[in-house]
Image 1: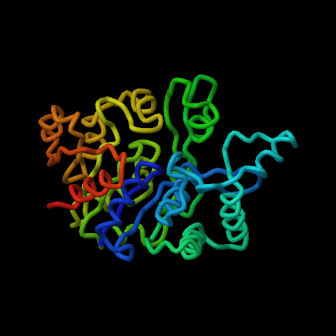
Image 2: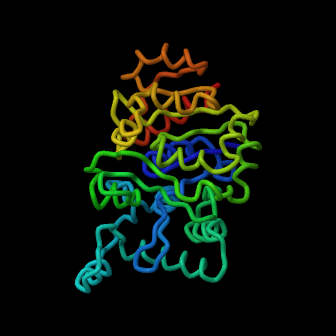
Length: 305
């Protein structure tokens, strides 16, 4: 049994390699829902969908999100009506959001809806939303706070980050199976996702960090920072805005209370000693996933004892 904590694109790419050497039924993925938002009256779950589409083999590989070959006629028409269309939702992608919103309005939980989405897409991995409760990640900038997706997509991560707020962390509870999946696992993997707005959101949910500390499973983290920069996304701006060193060491320090092993890129080999000083075992390998072979090799390193 393997359990992974995941954000969006980087995690989905890693999971692609992992599932080449493991059975889908033996893998559970706890996914960030802090990016969830409402647009056009629809509930959008960006990270859940990226993971589901990737594991279903229908993701747009070039972008890392959305459905390959999708069209955007609905969005183009909505723009003519004067609506904001900065968040690109394809026509086939919109069907997922319509389906999700309809079931949520009927009283289904986000976990139940996600199970139905996975069933329809032929995904046998257990995708577990981190919580079924309302949760929103907001980024503090000079003019106030904005939803993470607005900061990342609409504003192209252009403003300086002054802080991060997890709205809902004071009351949100883990969704069913999340805690059990951590305790029942042989290995728990912290995917190469943004350590604040992807993994940090999950860790902020009551009981999850404690479960990671107490589980008998090996907990292995993969650094999303290579040579002082993220592979994708605004992790550098967010980390520096919070006064955290933008490095593999900086991320390892965030996880040091529960992670047993931390995997870093060859370009960060010089960081090995510093990270080991935190009481964490370090593995050095290529973590940049340009090809399926790269993803497969990284997954093998992560699973090696």
